Image 1 (cartoon, rainbow, N blue to C red):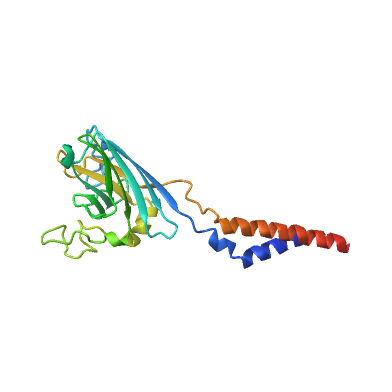
Image 2: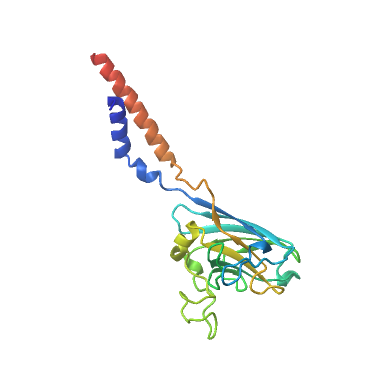
Length: 226
């Protein structure tokens, strides 16, 4: 191998660039509609709805906080004259319907960070952050959601750290429950964005530049000796 490249690669390894390049946030998007609803057996069960929704989500590089913005159009909260009685994140892929919640945003409101705006009978926007501190904010009540432990109960908010694999694999979905369709009128999968690839940190870029400069200087030194 060219001695210039050997020198550059040696320095890059000493700086630990491979490790630092892996630290990056991840993005996700969702599009919600009635035609994505499925039955308990996974077969399509589309609902006629005037409601739609869009969401963007961002997992920080430490994988400890998931920030989200969800906007519903054509649907509003019951508290504002609309029909939406609850907004949840559930486990499940596109061909699955489960009763298992991981985050309750409205009905009940377990995310203390959630901020609602654009409120009307036919619209709502909510922004918040899901992290482990949201765990089981609404305690388990007798007869609620099956088993009586927060970790396994269908209806409680869970720790983000326990569901990172589901999130990054596309195994979570939004479910918007309404007075009209209590099991869910519209839903949307949380899909990883295609560009979720490691982005070099500033120090990584600086280190790479240093390595290249080192290689060039090393090459000049060899040339002078010839």
